[in-house]
Amino acid sequence: MSILRNLVLAAAAGTLLAQPSRSAEVLFSCVLQSHGSGHEKRTFDVTIDQQAQRAQIGGNYSLPATISPTQISFSLNLSGSVFQYLIDRTSGLGTIAIKDQVIYSGICTIADPGHRAP
Image (cartoon, rainbow, N blue to C red; front, side, top):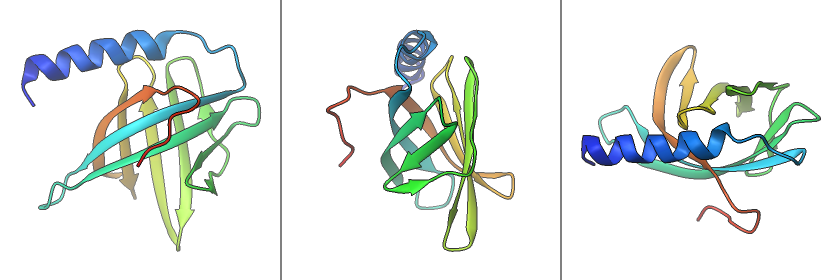
């Protein structure tokens, strides 16, 4: 992708993500790319329950999440590995890290309630 397109996407995501949510749950759609040699993409939805301070991805619930107006961070324990997720609500930048090493990064946007990632 071109730098200009990335800036436009980030600006649009920032506008959407900065808006206050009126419901307890917010659905994000994320497209992240691996930092490894294959540069594979991961597309997934994240449901954030702001009242319960939890996140859910594919039926897996997070450990308690930290949710603020500017960022969301949470961890998932999947098969003994703890994946740390961070979504910057201002820019839309999302990352996944293991042991503080970023392994995926990309863009997360607020999705319509009827949307589901492939």
